[in-house]
Length: 593
Image (cartoon, rainbow, N blue to C red):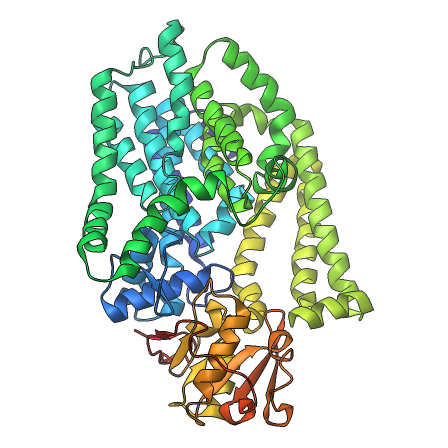
């Protein structure tokens, strides 16, 4: 009798053979590369952070100064340099900012996925490993940040590698080699973004298990204990990685003849670490910000499973299951850690996403069979698809409120929204509520692919000032000097001509007074500035001003030196920083190395 074709698939999901697992693993890897990598080369760096790190990387390549990152000719002490090094390498290899700036975060995202899948395979088996990879690829914040050139995805790779090493030692050891790799990864995370020590949040529960003697038993044995020797060797491995950058930087800053390097040393080692956490001066939010405003979407759609996952976690915790206790306690402590700081950004929660998947991994085979969870997935897709479809139709019909939004952002996404809304409806009809999770996962793949192609094409002209800076060059001439008071990094990145700026932390009024003095020294010079700031100065001759229009939410003026002859300048009001000269690459967009 002929065996039904669904039987091999059923056997695969219950107990895949090694050969089947390898094929499925390769398919998962291919899906991750396509999903996270598609769109590279299709857009320029977008604000707020991407142009800044692209500038850091470009200036490293042009000046050869890799130990001290610069931005617009000025030292940049806000972040350590590892991410800038990776960006500089990828830009150098590709020969273009446009092609290179997204590669480090894409690779970090793929690497994080591989670490999660491999750890879950060792802890829970092949089937769970594959499901954990799929779960991570559905997590909204994870995919979003893998497609965004910010430091946090590389930090997340470092913290996940550290977690992998520590848990290999704790749950599958003793494995002191992995223990040391975990600590070294924390050191790498520290010189990527100071909070690389986040995996230390595994230690309280780990030490408690060792103190209480309440170990989880599995086929591998007991949870490994942490000895004093282990701790000393681990800390030494972490400090060696940090010292690889911090020691040369400190030596050059301390014994060099440039006082600005000493200021950089003090800023990066103290102000941007402890002071930034304890007494933050930016992104101030209440303590509940993450719980209310970030985690519900950042952990989506994983949060849909919480009504079933929380009781299951509790049952396993009562059995002292260290495979749940360690990553779950780390998630909770990281949320508490960042909630206690007054300065908060949603992206700070990214390192919790792989940990959450590790915590949910053994529950996934049961969760995907829950009818209620499929209904929730069906409902979420109905909501998302419905909103996009209705908004797209109303926008295309010319609804005034949506027309104003489109005009303000210089984007008309109505056709795109209608298409992905229709696809959502189609998936809902075909898969129905009993397969709601699979419908949602399928739609998310469609969404991210369309976001990285169609969405990039729609948004790039509005979020990148490439065209505006080309227009500026056509007015001023390629060799004319340009001053950018109170500048935004994306404009300096796309500048086609020699440019100066006046210090990121210099008050805007001082920058304009210094700009006026600089312009009055040479009539061939120009000023590029925000209209809402420049129009406060009645001394500017409005008849000579070029109104460039709106870019990134602001109106911009191009002012010739001859228009500021009556303005009061001050050569001592602000320092001047000369940005390395930029030239357009063969795409006519981002600067070429």
